[in-house]
Image (cartoon, rainbow, N blue to C red):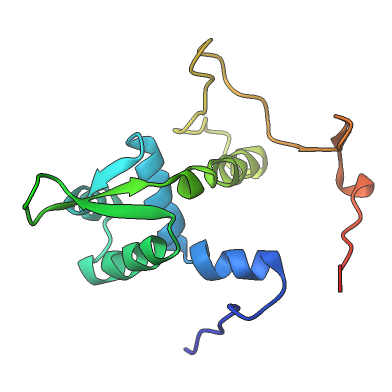
Length: 149
């Protein structure tokens, strides 16, 4: 199967998918976020059940795009750990959105094993929504996508 490249597309959705659209990439990011932003290679292999070669490819791409950095666990050491950058952390709302969307539309009534809570008051966060510039919550009927070409 030949994968199309969107690296020359003007569409921000297509360009974003070029960077983080591989499903293993999103799961790597999820695990890094769950671990406070830092994970070792072997931790990721074990927790995700991913092959080493696929993980290596995904990590290289995410590092190239500055979504994460790679650094030795100890000075001069061969073991590496991966750390989310600020750019990587800014993907958190997207991951939360995926989780909230799935929980809303799931066919089984079970409670989600992953809940996002406010660190300060330990309460679940509100469902994500799109807000207008003046603070109104917008629904699909309120949004007009406009091509800027």
